[in-house]
Length: 202
Image (cartoon, rainbow, N blue to C red; front, side, top):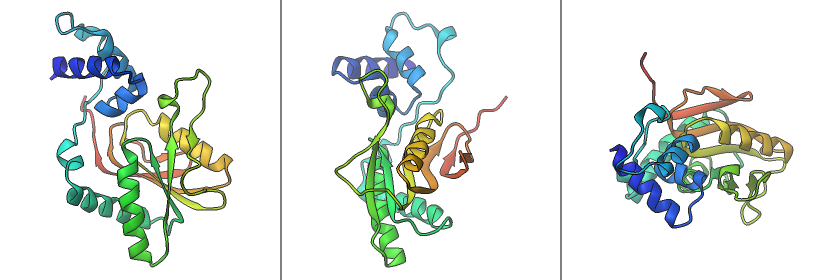
């Protein structure tokens, strides 16, 4: 499995992916992605490997009906915190869930639920760049917002998006994710809900 991840990471790097994009694609931390790209199949250094879990949700992502069911469950978790005006998907993998959740939540509440997209720092190539909400989708100022992503690895991106939302005058209601590898229950006072929480023993 480790050699397969190293191979995938190196292929992604050759195709021009940033470390943050590789981390997203493999559902690992940035530190793990960086470590993977520096390894070769013949010289793996297990002592130096970051402690992490690689998540593969390909069987879910390859099926629109499965994605819709899972997104409906995530929407149900978010609705306990109130009705959102905007569902904000974190690029890249949070966007499909957010899109489907906005549709489900609009149907459940009878109110139109808009879609916004967040581009995190880890995808930016410029040093000193900040995460940003796309201007091509819904505005968040004065809106109640649910944040959506696929996997929480360190929690940095979630903290970043909550900060940006508040700076733009939005009210983050909750964060919903498919998998939480960190075990976070809240970020800066915003509740975090996950369908699956990964726990390390020992």
